[in-house]
Image (tube, rainbow, N blue to C red; front, side, top):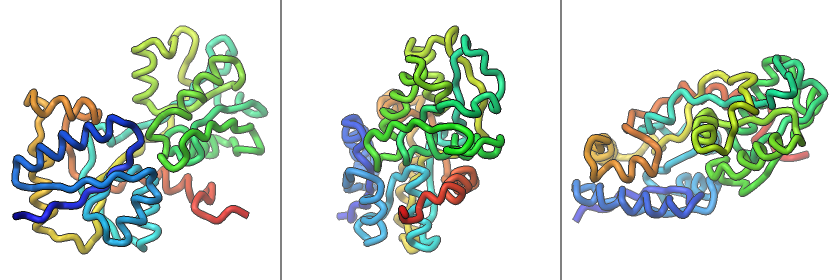
Length: 273
């Protein structure tokens, strides 16, 4: 019997177990069994991977950088969703406030997501910094630290930050482009009331991660199975819709530069003083 490949995933939402049950059946049918371990947060998952308890980890962008930092560049990015590439975050304002440029946020409150959310906090702060506004000096951050440790995957803090703007308690908020699209489509956002003030540079999101010493043969078999998923196949489409993709693509690391700059400039990984 083939030894299952040990895969780690963070249980940020109940649907995660449903998704991985479907994926597990898919891999089993292709002769590449997997054994999925769920973690409460990304720090525990990264620690488990470093300890050798996992072969592959489904990492957030911040978890990828944390794994690289703690392992001294000991991991590789092997696969990601098509929707993980070239994402952006928007700085959103109320139309009636007449805020037409980023500098007009000076002295105002900007609502953001959880402390460890790349899309709703870390990258937007870096974006505003490169546009001449320093958090805490030029504007006040009102953060919504919901479910810290999940790196903003749950979007709860991001949604609360949106409500803060809608209720007039902040001059702007920050959100992932996909959430702007979803929330304007489902009515959560009224586009006649809110507008995009500014958009960050492109960045990448989640990535499957392996240690550099992971077996090339096992990795190749796992990737062949993963890449055989087709959105055109109805039996594959359910999982792919749940996981928000239409195709699996090779992993890349060039899309993490913006987040790398953010955590360096914000000294995110440094111990609190």
